[in-house]
Length: 308
Image (cartoon, rainbow, N blue to C red; front, side, top):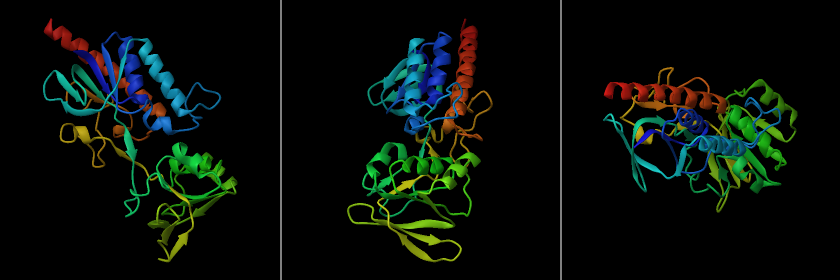
């Protein structure tokens, strides 16, 4: 039996693993895909402390994993299919095995929201993408559109400008929500054109994206933009499918915790983008992981004292 099982290998998960392993707790990290989560899809990070020069998200993720392993954390690539949190001993079942532990830290993160258009899913990989860093190079020399108005949409558009001669940003209001610095960079880039107060109603194409039909929300006029790609950056959905009905969630589906990252179930913590909070960034995810692990350590130690 492990002292601590951490589900998710993003910045929250590896920060939690680092603190847990350094505290000499038997620590297991279970990650179903690749290290870093959403962070790994970020090409350039300039706002993570300690790096005067920008660092790639994937590079930072691998460093975090290596550091956690150095102090004894075990990292397992497997998919969790069921969690039993009802008893004092928590049970985590994966596709390959079943594990028991004293505490669980939920760090499953969040995944991109979709537009919900008829052809959207069919065109994934054929013009529709939710990750500019992952797929941007495939659109070299082509025209693309980015949907969204936050930091992610702005960063995606700026990244795509490395490859594409023309990028449309389609946003449902007349003003971006991105930080001032990013907005300034967008305004200086002549490859980027804003399509304000508009939404995408239809993806046009046969075997791939050939254009998008948009509608102006003020004039109600419809028009078509000829594009070879559509990048969707409209926010995240928390990856809480495993624990719905088991821990308390907000109206938006995020896990509700206190400042110690404790959920409504003793011995169960949550950290990172999966948690209800004000700001979702790599640095806040890492901070969450540290807090969750520190609280979990106290819980384990107190449980040992009571059982002594």
